[in-house]
Amino acid sequence: MKRIIPIVLVTFTLGLIMLNASQVGAQSFDACQVYGTVYETNSPNDASFTVYLETSEAFADLVVYQEDNRLMANESGHWFFTDKEAFAHFSVYFVNKRGLADFSIYYTETLSFAGCK
Image (cartoon, rainbow, N blue to C red; front, side):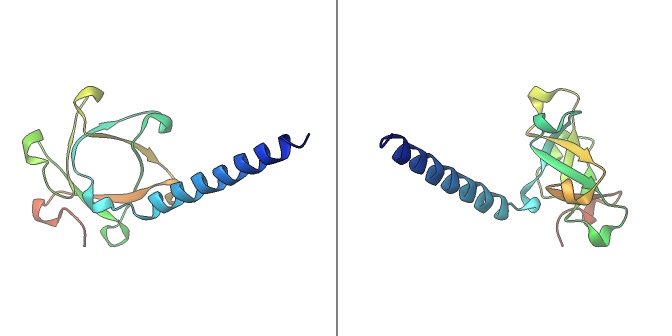
């Protein structure tokens, strides 16, 4: 009985430390660093990021330009979508509620508008 209490206490303390560490990592995330080859997944569990598609550029965390060439997707906001998950730098899952997303994007048709504000 005396050994159970220290084990429970250690487990509880480690759990709090891990929870705090995951929150610190989430706070330091920068959507401006997300660029490259993208795979759109149908499962939020398989996605690197959950993303909300804004209807206005003013409210988006990142303005995205869809590149036609994967080699040109080398700056903030430049994405090249691929059908093959193995070729992607990261994967995204689009959500329909802003509060569930890691960050929000707005698609632009103008190359020079891509990136962060």
